[in-house]
Amino acid sequence: MSKILVLGAALGGLQTALLLAGDGHRVTVLERDAHRAPADAESAWSRWRRPGIPQMQQTHLPLARWLQLAEAHLPELVGRMTAAGAVRMNVVAPEPGLRGSLRAGDERFDTLAARRSLLEAAATEAAEAAGIDIRRGVACRGLHRSSRGLHSSRDAGASGRARSGRQCPVHVTGVETNEGTRTADLVVDCTGRRSQLPSWLRDIGVREVGEERGRRGFVYYSRYFRSADGALPTSTFPLVVEHGSLGLLRIPADHGSYSVCLVSRGDDLQLRHLLRREAAWSAAVRQFPGAELWLDGHPLTDGVRIMAGLSDRKRNLYDTEHPLVTGLVAVGDSWAFTVPTVGRGLTMSLQHGLVLRDALRRTGTGEPEDLVAEFGRATDDSLAPVYRRTTFYTHHRLAEMDAHAAGLPYRDPDWSRSRALVRLAQRDPDALRAERAAAHLLPGAREELRAPALADAVARLVPEVEQDLPPGPSRAELLAAIGG
Image 1 (cartoon, rainbow, N blue to C red):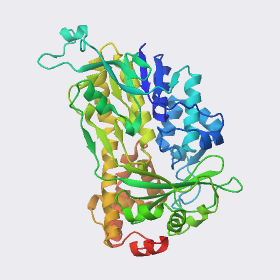
Image 2 (cartoon, one colour):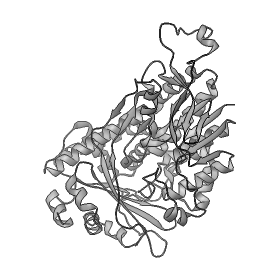
Image 3 (cartoon, rainbow, N blue to C red):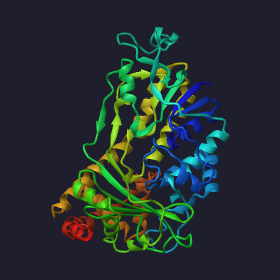
Image 4 (spheres, rainbow, N blue to C red):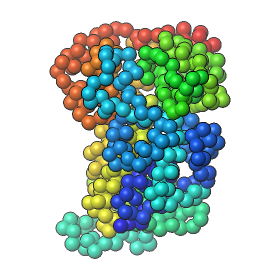
């Protein structure tokens, strides 16, 4: 078994640490934030200071695929989250497109609704109970590399794989921290979208690392509420609505709490200036028919919580035939960050942790180049397609927002089909399940979408979608309502 350092004690890092510790590896987690998680959910919400997790009080809901994977591989984690108050909910049941009761098999659409702080605190408890050493207040300042480069008996030819004629990759043997050097057989970067990995790699001589980055992204304006009686408002208002210039998410959470979040373009400075004010934010929510019920709760946040500067980004660590660096892997958002609108980050992180666990089972850390190559191939096979589908969404949704602001319809054949599917899901329960399976990354979803009857029904709706602007106020009406 190997000595492994995981950088970052947010959900992604703790999930990965639990998976690796479950295989017997000696796992230490280094976390730069010094404060421990409070013992109860309300204290974790109001008192836990996590500067490294700016989304701590933002809207959050794991995908149904995350719960499937967590129950299969980390049941203790799910148990602790549920015991702390996370609510099992079905992402099909609240939708207005549902006709009749849930069907057999609809449990695949279950997930856990909770505030991010509760999930983080429960994951910390699970990691500590599993014997994982979490060192808080330890900041990574760089990587420690082998002074002799990568050395392995198999490099001389015993592997049967030619390695002559090219330079061996730089081999990482640990990290430099504010408390000194820490060595490990493997360093796992789980520090998320703020990871300093490219600069750390440049400092040790790895200069080929580039990034694929979206030019634009979204801004999120969130507020949390709690209902007076602890029950959520009864409403047929869907979980997600995307009007022209704005999207709206209303997400149930734990202990009678819930969030309401508006989503705009990152470069929509006019809305950014207005929506930071509570009155304008509330007026914008009321532009979505039926959403006003969600404003009646007791506010749990002071003012509007804004999260900005978020666009899709992927680092090319695993896009080359041979590893750029060994002894180090990037997992989850440290490798590829997807916009929170689609909510895929936590699920992709857990999938990526499983990819790493399985690669370690096959190769171990004794052959560092084989491990990283195996991990890179599996990453590209299983997760790169999800990233590409997300960038498709981001590109077209931003273009649709641009067109609406100009008073024009947005027409693209592929985007029109995806919008037709969403519209059909509001009318047909089978389409709803297919659309929701795809959105939640469930197995078999792509086959469901290709069913001839569904494909024909979607095609018939495309002209309707292309000739209509999204329902709701025009840009001028929206600005007038919120004081623009």
